[in-house]
Length: 85
Length: 199
Image (cartoon, each protein chain N blue to C red):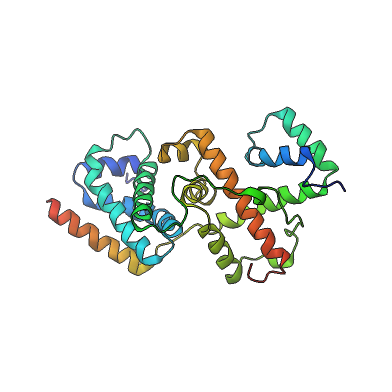
């Protein structure tokens, strides 16, 4: 296994990792990157953990407001609406 | 025949603009979780987030007559919320790193922890400990990078939408997002490398 830190290609691919993940990389670069990854277990691991990190954070999205927070918001809005009338 | 389909945001905005406060309340119900979630992640504590949530929707209600509907209502409210959060951070100096200072990852840009932890049984479920680790690390991102990451990767907005909300160019959003992702990946890798102990 080559030295990931010193490898110019690894460093170059690290810079375009987001574009690769987001599907915004040119086809030619995708092909080059994937060819490189065939021989670079470290880049494979970085890509997988990069992707998983984003997946984890996606699950932290707030799905509901606590009941008391919602009540406080409605109270504040009613006061605003009443004052606007 | 009665139409049972939910009104669209556009329809609710039109009704709210005509004075229907119930329509505005429906808009609030639809979008409050997203805005509260954004405020929590940006302001880092529930009390400030609740306060900011109220500020955002009161501002939106008052400014509704001037909303020209060039963007979606959700995008417009995200913009109000983003500005409110960043303003509070500036005022209260919540972040030790300046809002305008770019994230300097330095060596962190080069992954130090390489092991693939995605097959680790501990990584299969989102447990309380992992949740708190994720929160701690996102809290360590400078606000400028955090807001981009939250809009793009937590809330799933497009790069273009995030750029519009933040008044940034698309390349600027991409650059901040990339640095934030690398930073968080590295911190999570360190967490797993240390055996899942608090990193």
